[in-house]
Image (cartoon, rainbow, N blue to C red; front, side, top):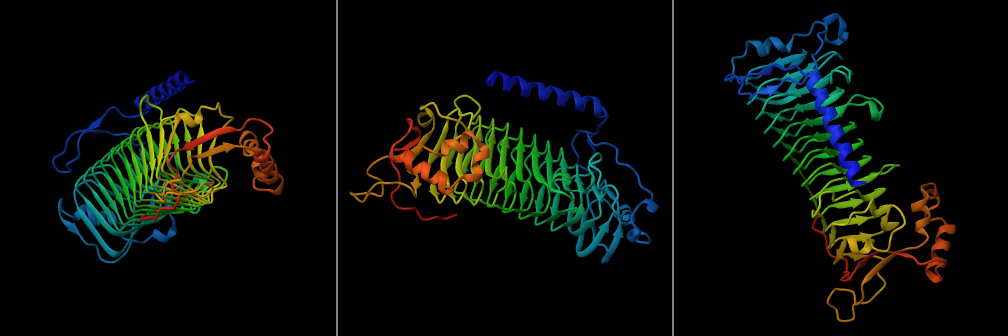
Length: 452
């Protein structure tokens, strides 16, 4: 199975490479001393040009913002007079554009509002609105294609995609507010997308009612102190290594943070809450390796952590320590168990099921992962010597919950009187030998205080 997955991933990567090589212009942008952009391949589809008559009437008669940009010398500071301006606008030279919170650029519901095709620029205190709704041309409020740019305190709404970085490195996105167009969840654009973009800082942004925040083939980015609400994926990493997610608050999204085909990465000091629904998951892994999950609050989710073939790389581990899993449907769910998960000093309380495996175990699951020093609210033991550690190990067995694990349709009846009675009878006089899910030799007896 592992070999089949490896071959599938290799085939996918080859197909993507062929697609880009066939669909991307071979012409490269040369190093330009004016813009400071490094050599990069032009990977964008050609942006269509729209006549003014094709744009919404609300922008007719507005002064084009492009005229102000064209008149500003490279390296200067542009502080436009307050007001509403017509987009689109393309910036091909380093500028500092400061709208003072009183400037709106509206593209009239066609195309992309602003294209930042330069490096070492600053865009702050603007309101960008009114992109088109075409996924074919990635209509967005702000395209970023250069390096070392600062995007700060920009308000974005009524846009398909919010901020779209492609091959853009070492930029800072800080204090921005992003709302998508009012569309069904699946057809909205991504609030923030990074594609082959590395070493960027994403902090103090609000992404509300969008689709996803994604990082594809993008390494060593920092996502810090952001807020995400009512979207699909708070953050989705794919083939993206060594990214840091810390101090964020993610509420009411389908999935909190998801690692797919990744290596490395840190998720620490975040609050992930109410990831509910059929796919509700706080943190997820798919063939990921070498990740640290530390000091997070994962509460009221369908699944706290869901793991599939992770860790994937031989001899690698996933470290889960100091987190609180509270009031979730399942605290941690392992599918296609490979071992290599180390769970230390976590709190498990109020979960309908603390830990589970996606199918009937083979009585070796408890030996593949490591559990130590965790607090379990269902621990049935004492601490007679007062050292804070239970006098006996905490062992978790699978009883009647195996019914709804193996038959997902039965989850509707979970916690119903019938299943509660079956579970009681199974524990009292097991019909068959139960599966040992885990063994924690040093369970905490007293719930530790939290500093999250």
